[in-house]
Length: 345
Image (tube, rainbow, N blue to C red; front, side, top):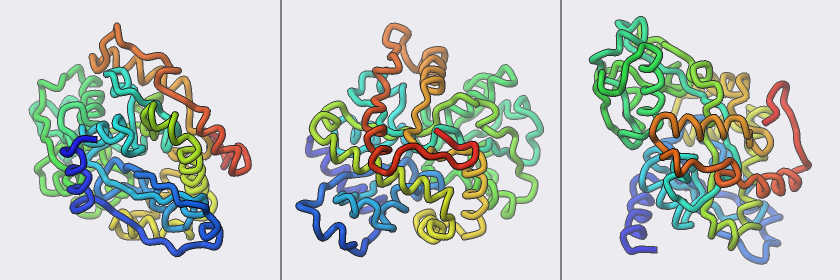
């Protein structure tokens, strides 16, 4: 690993690293050795949907499997720092088909959240997507190519507009909500807890479209690891996935247990967290099993090709993007597949 990358991780530890202290359960005391893993989170501070590793850490699910997990917050899952951390085998984090199609030697190993949780929220004056022409839209979390930029592009398409018809504003992910409330932005993808807060802070802002309805097959968030890390640390990765899979299931089965830890991690008021948790579980946003869905992945690959994000000659296959075997092993360790109502991914 390069000195520059070491320095980037040190900087992350100073400005964006969120570490939760654990009590040490009896199971951990019998571990022959604690295995260290850096677990990336796409937003700083995290949205409710990203808090699975925080819940796993706070409840001792990592440490009970002899995993010493350090949670690192990135400024967007598609940021150069996040992609570099995965590609160099220094962390597991969100990795996309676009990154893999662009040459990153990594695989998606577990689907945290197959479905999109966000709404595209706009200023009171915006009644239709056509009204966004000439307006300021968010490109938070990495600028051009970031998730906000990509979904903004999809919203514009519904009115036959392009990214050249608006002004995309690049800023940190934490700036999305205040940008809309202060009028610096007129269109932004917001997570449910921030939709709740935005409508309280600035009556009149409203949801133009639910992104899961606009892009029903878009694969939102899958954890990935480098090919080298998968080969060298497979057992560690399987146990890390198992801990987070257990945490995801608790989001559905024991909300009172997880809410305090989500509030701490997100730094959001409890009512906003409760609103988001209800939305995310109702809409099956979090996976309860492997989270792998071939149809979603193949659609997302083709969408990236159609939009010019992946060169057609470099279009990856499903098998080049996904290695489901680790998540299947993890699922077996926690008792096999489960479902919560209609939520079965």
